[in-house]
Image (cartoon, rainbow, N blue to C red; front, side, top):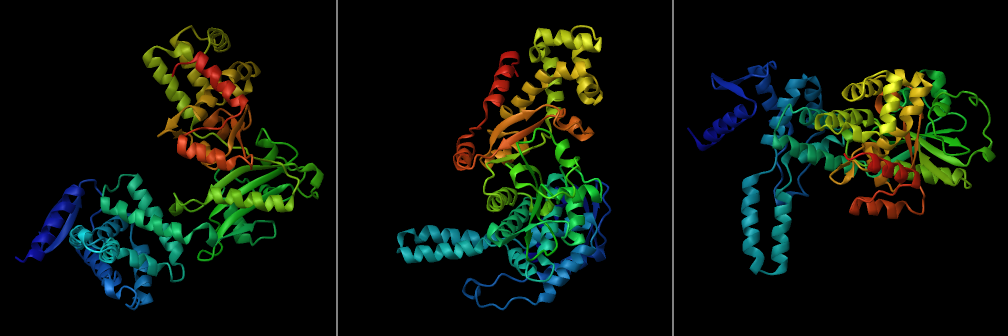
Length: 504
């Protein structure tokens, strides 16, 4: 048996271990039987996968020919795309694993050049730079050129965005622990970041006169406050409202990230007046009634562009657009949901119960009020009664419960946004997004979203992140470099109250 065949057998055994598979040899071909009960790929399908990859993934040109080699035929890219789209989910995973493993970096070549670079350190600078250039080129995965060529065919960029969405799903769901697959994802993300750089994006304002297909997608992609019907959508792109989207020439008709703005007299403190008020549906705008721009919804539409910075640039571009249209606008703020607060609160209550410190979350007077309102006995039963209240929306129908829970939930929410961290940054993803942009955590709003979704996610609380345009650069740098959160007196006051009453 040749060295080539020995390496092939060894690689097959390694893949078998990775997938916890049993490898059987039938006439020299492998049949996979996954213990996870996924349907195995047939011998014919596996052979077809190998044939497609060998045909469509061109060899990496030599260093000397890297700029002179003719590009592969466009048919290779089209055949790769067509074949991938025809595969089932499990087959796509196997296909991508083989692509990333067998057509990545030539590690032997890299090792040889790394050794030569060490030896070249005693030579002249020109020699060192030349070896470094060769080493840099050798670190290019073979499949990278395929991805670049696919981006140049019609529909190729959209195909790659969707392919990365598959990669993210496979890696996040633990369907595969392949390091090669993660490297493929990293390479594709890097390419997409280049192709979708802010200078290549087009800002479009969406109006009721926009193409029906675009309006339909705006409605479908709305992830923060779902659009109920066409009248609702007309309101959101009509008077005293603005809707903007980033688009890309390679994905015509596809909004990439969408921002909804409300033009108001003052900074809004509840979402109902924005998305459910139809009194001004067909009226003309009175410029004198517009002094604030409220960013109340921002939605990314392409899962495959996760991690590619688009939303922060969109807000900055929209601010410039609004300043051009309304030079007198002086207030820019979000009205943001607080996803995850209710879940965090339930976890905090459970943890406090286990540690026997639950009473520290509320003052003695507040616990007595909860006992009276719920009829629960003191101690653990009161804690359980509080947990049940928070897990349902029933409490919002009782004025007494609303009054009792307001100070408790407001200071707990303030701490969740300001004090709970991941790697030193805000745990809440929406807070992290706006703070990175340089916004100030300005105001928490009680009963700002009383929809079932708002109550379930954040007990109806929403938050304004305010953009003081002269301070955003300083705030952003302080947050990104030193983890410093700029917050208003209201927020800091609530945080202080939490620290006085609680010891999480």
